[in-house]
Length: 308
Image 1 (cartoon, rainbow, N blue to C red):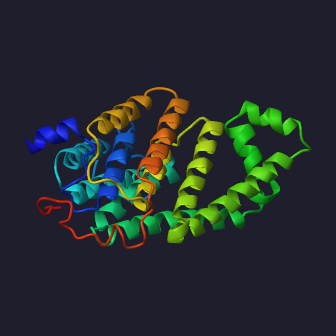
Image 2: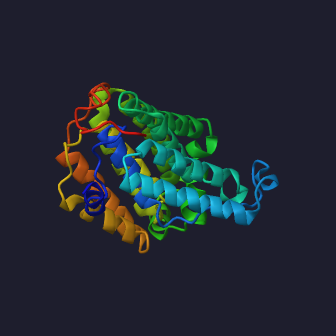
């Protein structure tokens, strides 16, 4: 009966060692990663090739992938599942220098942070990771002159991604003006997000700002950077209070469009992710205080303690 319930409600988040928002975060990010290609063993950062051949590394990656997803969706071993999935992504990044990706690094670290948490400290760890991410990204940009003079944004939008609408808008203004404005706005927005998400009473403003910031970049660039966009939006669930149980229709409404969208257009993917984040924020709108989700007794929403 328990397995049947999990089959028809893949996003069920009760009866876990982690708080409800964190279980839902893990499952949404795992869904967003289903269509990702596993990294090969090629020019590794560390000498993994001395221990494993490329074929053996590929087999190990697939074992971790299957084990992590099966444990996450069909058992209550959520922390073990997150440990396996996080190890998969981080080991893949270490095994392939050309595959280096900040987006995938965040996803791997998010799974490991989820694995390290529990019902008391888990929400704090996830919130801290997001605050550190924005603070570090904002500080890095603030110390780079190319973000202030517009050169970085000009290269990003016109040369790397060749965004036609941006090129047309920039042509209507003096050279570099639009790129300067966007570059400075990106620096200030990320620094502001670090502050907003660090202060409990400003969480709502931080989540709204983050959805608009990342959503606008996805629409402009036409890419979700792999699972990064969905992972960022899903992480905002650590700042909200969820109901005791998801309505039965929600798993189908969220899971299957999310999976199928990664086989189609990026704009469609972005639209689904934004709608998902907006629905979560509107329906389950109360932001948590720093201790509200974390201090909930472990057995308050679980029928039995988790083994993970």
